[in-house]
Length: 257
Length: 226
Image (tube, rainbow over all chains, first blue to last red; front, side, top):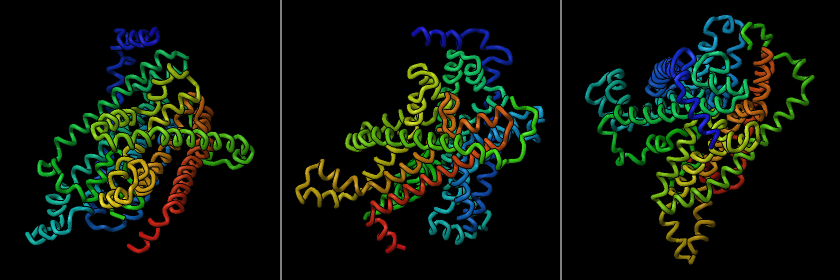
């Protein structure tokens, strides 16, 4: 109890709410880093996913690469990048190292979900679009992308949550954000500071997750919001698995034996 | 802190061979931390998953709570449980690691049990199976592909997260990564990273192998349907 009240004191003391080492400033820099990584990854992932999904080419290699990239511990990647001379000599070395690592982390879920979302647009809808005289670009923009949007947004949500989590580790390589409290606390053996930092980071991650969930619902085309009718398409089953992407059940679970 | 870069070549093989013993023991620790987490995770998820599958109203809260645990960043979760389970203890590491397996496993258990066709269940009842027998002999075996898919994702996830527990003095290969950073030495980080990825790949392959062995019918079905 004493410990918790100390943490509460830490979190509410006015010293921690102003200046460059205050919660608002650190939160802002964490958000800045995360937004840069997620926005870049979304552009890259959706772009590449559109090309692959629309043409259906090269998908095997790219999707497997994306899947393999998932096994790389982002923590190791950040640290490895941070000590490379070319990055370490930069003034913002922590920011650069972390944003590259987080970009690499955020592309796979967005790319995979975009690809699957576009690939799994029912062929009859595609035929209808063709029959209406749509050109490939129009079909992508007006038919495939809107139908894939829920899945793409789910991928972006996964990416954003992972990125915010990893942004915490950026503090370890010298980029000041909320992780700074955690690592300073660990370094100076102040369990209260560490705990308070962890608390803030957890709140931020949960906040980002809810925000992305809300944004995802708001941006989903109205016709897809109650997708009960489509419940059997693999894409939506995939979305039902939510934040657990990629490794699909070996035997398709809903296929009767 | 390592800010002046002279981190050396990516891999200095002489360092690797002269530190083989340390690397192997950290690798072994990594395997142990992972295995403990997945086994405990499964032991918790299986009854909870079955319960939530039977009692529908429990699904949302259960998935909600485990989902929230899943969202909390690993460093933060470690240090949030640390005051209770002790800073720098293996319990702290395992509590955090197990937390991350729950959502994955519980969801897949529920999805697997849901996927059992109703007529199969009817047949089991018709043959006089009690609900418990049907669960054990019919539903769980049929749900196994989905459950094992969950175990695969959980295992690969945990292998990666074990690295982060190096911040509280556990961490297996993660210790190499941190040491490499502190001494500005590429080789240790690369060795930690590569072994960690390899370990994930091998664990994944082993589970796939186990799945094939334990599900002969799935294998033959796939062979036919292809």
